[in-house]
Image 1 (cartoon, rainbow, N blue to C red):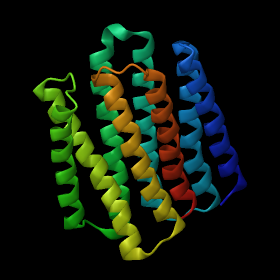
Image 2 (cartoon, helix red, strand yellow; image 1 turned 120 degrees about the horizontal axis):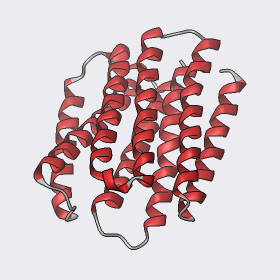
Image 3 (cartoon, rainbow, N blue to C red; image 1 turned 180 degrees about the vertical axis):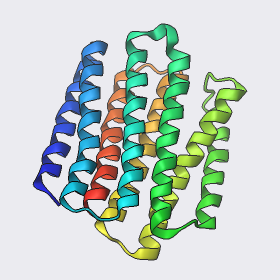
Image 4 (cartoon, rainbow, N blue to C red; image 1 turned 180 degrees about the horizontal axis):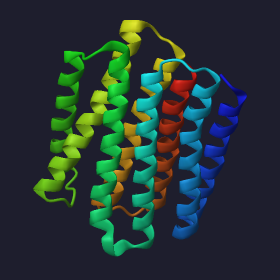
Length: 229
């Protein structure tokens, strides 16, 4: 793997840390700019990784689409911070773009191991679990939004189970381990985000820090999985 991938991953970390610190200080606009820079850096990791070792073209293309959808999702959620008037619409659009990214990622995993019925079952159960937990946590969402969130979580659980299946079927290659850890980080990050957006919390900075501290490793590890192929 090219050393430049490590440099870009480190830049992602630096930009993400700047974003977290600025957000904690209430400087939303500056934090948003660093968030965009971090997103651009993790997209670059996959491109550079593939260019130095062009293997698994379909996997690279699909993961790149996933990362780009994540970038656009970041843009939408970043705009929310400076335009709270459109918060609900931007959250829904952000969920849509991230969902498209997760679907592209799932398609990338399918290129490696095909469709696995057991993982579909796990994804379905994950979505049902999320629907129940939204009620348990008393999230301030209507039925439509609760359903959308449940579908989204179903995709997350499907993604984790597919990454686990790649390891089980094809062995514990670094690329597959990176994909699995990435999926787990996404679950943690989006759980923090859901609690932050839809419940009443007093210590928001803690959740913001936890969310961003797991989100960027999730994206970087997914991008690194391309370079590790």
